[in-house]
Length: 244
Image: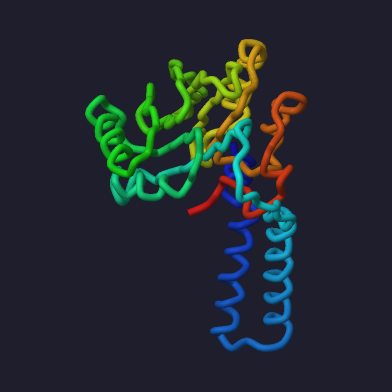
């Protein structure tokens, strides 16, 4: 547990931030010479480590057109809807996605789902809305059937969705894993990987707010099964732990 706390509590971005705070403190104290040079060296080294390890610089080209066989998918942590359902839907209009998975999306009672449908309809968006777990919501432009949530451990769940694309059945799974430094990630990943045989019959997309550093060995259970799109595309800031 002590190593778990250190690993999840002090990932590269946090270490970089701590080194930056130390640099500011030394500069403000007007200390000269070796302390200032060391502080700059540590901060630049940490900043370079983040830029090298956590940011992809090979940007993929964008296409103005969409082929009929293209499936556009979006994952969004809505952070408990600070601007309400209507504010969230205003952002969704810019996604142009066929399938959208939302986490931290507030309550999902029948009344809440009706509000989502009304807000989407008011914006001219034709999405089916479905949820079987509070905080986790599927929006789909394709006919879809939502499954029961799969318990992945402490405040961690996966919600599967079956849909059709290009004339064949497919499956998507929305994952939200606890953002807590005292909760090891390996058991949750192992429970998700245990579904591998049951889900082998159809093409699978996993949308995950994993709250886990991308270099974590917990991801090893996906080797030979799932491909991480962030590492393939290598564009932008990849980690989901921690970000504001």
